[in-house]
Length: 108
Image (cartoon, rainbow, N blue to C red; front, side, top):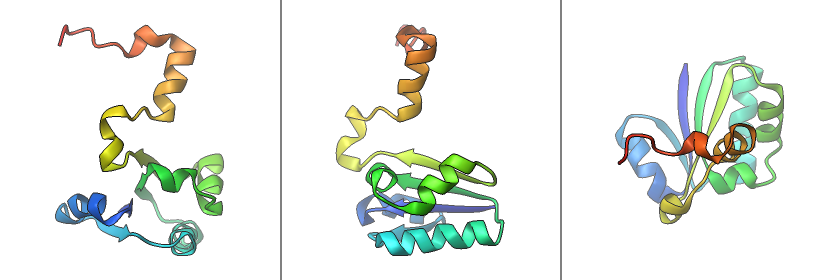
């Protein structure tokens, strides 16, 4: 299984320290090409992708997210927005199960 991270260079520094293959400040075409290669070679991969890239117009991101399969894309926030970030899955859980489903029940 491959583990990749894609985003701005400040965010990618931490991933590269962990030994993860990073793509820092890459163009949309490069990101699309990397994802296309993963799919074409039917590789299993975990891809950490910065939030703005997921919302950019990258055809393979849309294809992978719609088709599912062996590539999992995990959304990560920008460093500057980490405290205010709410992932789409959290919003979905709130709509389906109610906002109380995500509340901290440990009293912390």
